Image (cartoon, rainbow, N blue to C red; front, side):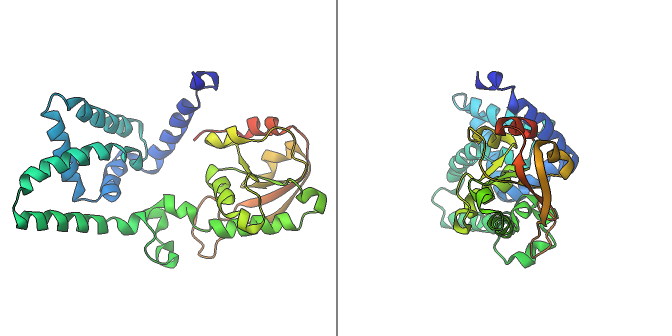
Length: 281
């Protein structure tokens, strides 16, 4: 009911996002990234779990559910990690199947535990920052662009906070930061309070962040992050560029090199601005 009353945002999200994923990664990339997601030694365990579920009529529906989700994501071009929650079912069943194979044999127990430990280490470097950022900087785009998007967020929030503090006193009161992505808004929510930006300062029209805008007009200035002047100038009476976002490692991501624009006087109501900037992808 909610989806229907709000314009089916999940349908729009899936259409836009899956098209982007297909262009960036392709279906072969979806399959190969499953190895990175769970590790190569865990895939046989998941496969054994699906076989175990399928052979038992009372549990067969779970095997069908996992296979259906995997096939659907492969066809529509979803991101590789979207399949992650289904592995919980496959691993649980696979562990039951593996327990029968291990039995009471100490050598098989050692083999199973060693395989699990090795499997945990293989994908670790790709899914968690276990080394200094400098070691990842050149490889982030190819290794894990999702983590690459997070590089430089504290530095970005530092720059946003500095811009906010140089505004006239009357504009600092109730200042808002409107970001092009929910990731940037979340980073400001997370790191902002320690830098003088109250939680709730960040707003975005991206995905579900569009539903969290406050009622009423903000009394202060609006800082636009990662928007072009031509996109937002129609909503402002006074607009000026103030900064270009950077990160110390020159890791290429969406926010690196993005402009910050200050809107000193918002020409429209916040809900009008939100609806104009709302997008799902």
